[in-house]
Length: 481
Image (cartoon, helix red, strand yellow):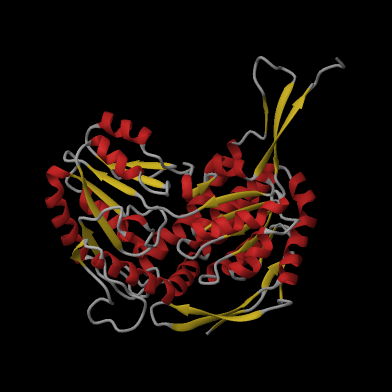
């Protein structure tokens, strides 16, 4: 059993003032794998106070020095890569190969990209040739509360941390209590890299406790939250009294539009993308929409692909999916699969219950439904599990109508060999991101959504700007008027 009962505050590991014992569950065994402490108001106040004290000096630190610390962190991160991968695999169930490559790799990639983006960022820039005495200055907002989820923990922590460092914000991180070990290891890395005391602080807690305390705290200037839409609404309401900036990266119900002229791997690619990380990704292409002329063929191919996906222990190497993160998530996925059956969707792969031969662990069967409509829960709600819904469309206009018929707007996907059609659809789809023919966003591409998928953008210069205030200076270098 791993014991991680301390918090990282003001450059040191300290005992919690109001700690409540919390057992972290290994989703593969349903047994505790670690014990942590959940903080209280005194712990939150101490962390925020440390960040507030550190802010003036950190803000005044030249950007070059802040970026140099990021570069030092990259070296530490790389040296402890395997530790990070093992922690993520243990606590949230990612298969170890996925943890090593994608989960841990995402964190490293984002930190590296913020070094690049930070060196290119223009913190002071002219308004324009028409106004020679006007300058625009980018300044850090202040103390940033960062509340992160369990499903891609290092991905989300580093997207916030790297941007805040370049911007000059000080930070208090509350990671998910479901996956805290990677965050505490990250705090060790930050300390080893030599960041000044108070710049980065970590307090474990749950959403109702430390999360609520941070989002409503008067000395917190910005909340950057990744998680459910429900929680995002609560955070926004709690933050309103203090008029702080709230950045939200929330849920999704991505449409994957597959046209008759799509490449032969389009359906397979869509199924594998949906099932990756056991379907626990906000940008998963969970609604596969197929042109009518190839619909039956696509349904058959999707079912065949899903039936080939192996489910196995996170500790085992190989290309398989692991368990869902906890009992609550397992029950939710099972309920939604059953609702699809009850509401008349055609089950073509998977179904309720654990995979054959498994009687322990939060493992779900890779599941595919055909003939889904948006009146069904599985066509409307974010499932956050390995469940794909397939529905037909008649033509391009119908595809756009179906894709946009959702409260979410994070990522949509287009599969066609007609580049003019693809570009035309990219402009019509109401989402923060559109991926065409399997092309992922490049380093620094802004990640974020619209509608109930949130606001703001993460990654590259766009992410840095979200942690900054814009100051307009008139009369720069000019004599009195």
